Image 1 (cartoon, one colour):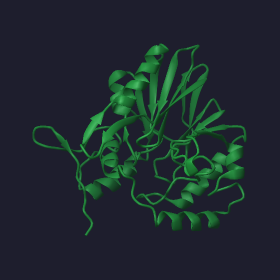
Image 2 (cartoon, helix red, strand yellow):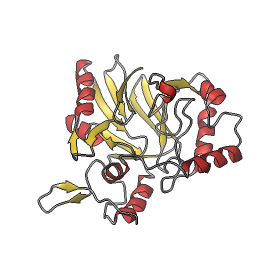
Image 3 (spheres, helix red, strand yellow):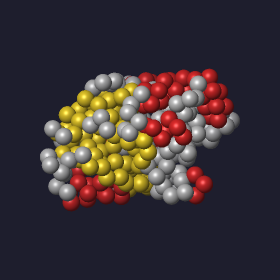
Image 4 (cartoon, one colour):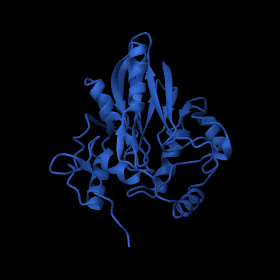
Length: 284
């Protein structure tokens, strides 16, 4: 198993290609679609970088995994699938809960059955990509109800926004249907894995000016995570997380991201001529 990462500086997002040179099979985790909010322009720059890498290594893309419905960037999954139509986009089945909540928030009529995605998955399901590449689903809700981590070959875990590098802590839990209680339990599932299991995070912001990092281990998280160590009690975590979340600003790309990502990579509002637009609820 080999892993190649891409870092999108605009959204501080990590995208991963997990692949086997022996079988030439590959999966992609959390691809990014470039979006400039000021101009409303969309580009596939990051998706094209993925495509170039896959082609350069003669890799067959089998699955595109979304660790959750992202609120800080537009997903590049549907754009990448246009390059690789046989690849299946996979998301947790609780996407349906997200669609219900945000249909109400945006007064939209997105289908609430997850049918915009190729495959809906759940805890314990495995994807046999190749003889030497297997992905197991571990449910890690809390940041959102549809969060999942990808346990690859029982040696690497791709955690999305559940936890970050130890000096950054954990994901926020103040989005609709988010739960600090659920996140604490999800982190305990992660900490139950072997201490040497490598963790690959979904974002990094280089706190304190340090270089961008994206790899740590279960053992390092248990010892050093500034918000939830192995010794942190649930009450301590809930008190910290709920207090902190109450003072966080909304992500810069929250509105376009949710309206695009919950619909499988299609804008949910369109003019009569088909041109997409965003609906921005205003709070007075």
